[in-house]
Amino acid sequence: MAAYGPHLEGDTNAPLTCLALVDNLTIDDLQACAGLASRWERMNIGTPLILPESEFRRSLDAFPLEYGEIIRTHHVLYGSNPFTDIAIAPDDLRRACETQVKSHLLHLREAFIESGGKPGPVGKLVAASAPAFMVLLRNVARLNGVLTSDRGEATRLGARAVRIPERLVNSLLALEHRSDVASVDADRLFPEYLAAVEHLAHAVDTWRA
Image (cartoon, helix red, strand yellow):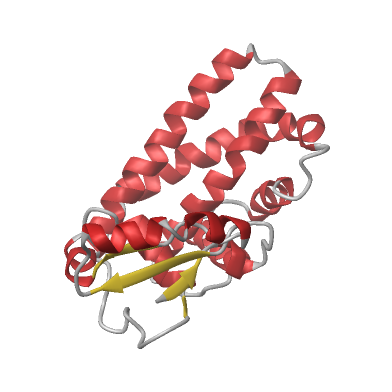
């Protein structure tokens, strides 16, 4: 069993998330776990991701970003390290990154139109979408072989790999911790932020190993 996610990276308010790989998983196993759900909630533990190891291995191509993030941030709690001989195929990771970044770009443009271009709503849009953009940069870092488990370092290295200004990245990172003033300042970032997402989409689309 391994823990992973924001809780391990310093967000102590986030639930502790865990992955348990098992030999097999029956309805009786699920029923037993269901009996622990309320206890886990009281302890701020997210419902564990439990699946057979063979299923996990066969699903790496279907969930390269999600499983890649678990591999990047994991801490073994019990048993041997389940990821010692597991790797995400670069082509699977690139395709998933392309889908993610182009979806982000489409929603960002649409939400800007819906905001009417007004500073307040635009600022809230930037602040609300910035964490997802940080995830995109970390995924691009992985695509370029960066294996660090440090969230901030992975974000900046991903940005550096595709030549997105570190000043912009630092401003967007700050929004994750300054939600009370984000709508006042963040609207000014939108043009550069949008350009950065467009640039990222092109970089991922044309990426070659």
